Amino acid sequence: MQRPSFLSLLCVLLASFSVSGCATTPHFDRNFGRSVDLLRAQQVINPQAGLNRDPVTGLDGKSAVAGYNAYQKSFSAPVPQSGGMTISLGRQ
Image (cartoon, rainbow, N blue to C red; front, side, top):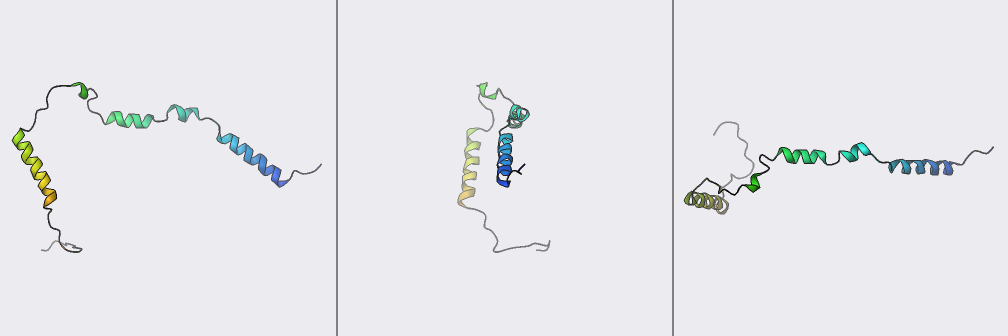
């Protein structure tokens, strides 16, 4: 009786590994994406909020315009930064 060659054993081993890689995972497939759906649902306070057609109450027009202008101005004139690396130890 002749021993099988190393190459034939390697081919059989690789074939068995490739077939086992194609096996289905019903437990994982059934739960696939469930964690993402759960996290998305937990972040929504009111799922029916889009159906509410009542106007939003809050700032009046003048206050909203003033707040928006102040926000835009913060980008045009940024606060100057101190030069280089500054490490403060509590003394001025």
